[in-house]
Image (cartoon, rainbow, N blue to C red; front, top):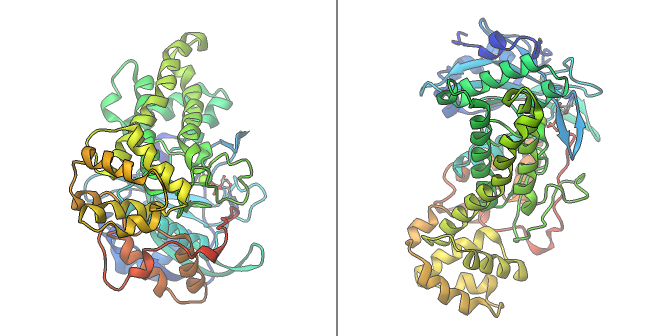
Length: 477
Ligand code: AMP
Ligand code: MG
């Protein structure tokens, strides 16, 4: 198998990773291959399916030109700082330029113990690996920046979690794996020369137009803020709760990364939390902008030594940017929700008025926005069924009718019909664990174009039945 790697991370950032060889999977068997992604990367799908391909996709043996390594990073996890996290069960295989000339990391998760594993086994298991496949593809279909799975391969090994599980390795593709936590790693150690090398690398990779600017680190910070503001607004607009927005799970690129305990809301609830370990609701649905800004403040802090020799001189330059971030996040959110309502102007009263009714009625978030377009088409029944009991509805609809400028079709194009409904995802994963990938394929079919109704897939539109109980997600995947 020949792959044209071009491994800038390995070449330019020595001292920021450890070379690493993955574990050999005893009996690798392909669960799923993302052919469009393989094609976009210029990889031959048949070669990936071969024993040599599966060895690469599980980390056991690398093709020529790969630069297998484990990245160093730190991170604030639920507010507490760990100075050393790093790829504990992951590795970078290498970088390739895709068909559009964009640089992409090929990265594995579950490829065995690394020097960063601490007490962990370095493994991943089938359910969470396929969950990452599903949610990543869904996010991509929804038009939300995300890492994407290239493949999921079962290793033929038993991995112990609560009980015995099937071992699996995810191969994912990202525009980079640079995180807020990567910067924190070197800042915490006060390794300023490395920090500068890392920042210049990140700028060359993600914001190359800034590289010659004398104030490039501040400009870079602003770019990362802008990307995250846009990203989190997109999460909110589809009801996505990331669940573990630690600084090591926040990218510089603005792509969503690490689908662990994430979930989508059915009934609209700003306080929605799904993760079993998020007792304080730190990463609740509506807290995500504030938490993202908190993380970005950690990035700003880490960049201070590059912005001025003396932190006191850097602070006044950075502080206004961090303070303005709140406004940026709010603007992005308003823009997304105005579009969902088909309104040309972002209007807080209109947006919050609608969401207040959804909250009060416990109405399905995704269904309610679709029902608005149905109302535009002349059928008010679906909206009435969801929030008809709310005394504010008629007045709101009158106000909205004046402010709405989009057509029903335009509204449908920004309001998905299909999202990864938690109960459907669980069903698909249970089936996959039992050897039947059919339900997962069905989900992937609608996720590829979630805005368009697909006959025969109506069951995937609706929320979990009322008696389904509370949905809880778990870390430790
Ligand atoms: P995550 O929660 O997946 O973002 O991971 C947080 C940190 O824990 C990262 O440094 C991971 O590499 C590490 N980690 C998670 N699971 C394992 C595992 N099974 N073995 C070793 N390290 C792990
Ligand atoms: Mg992570």
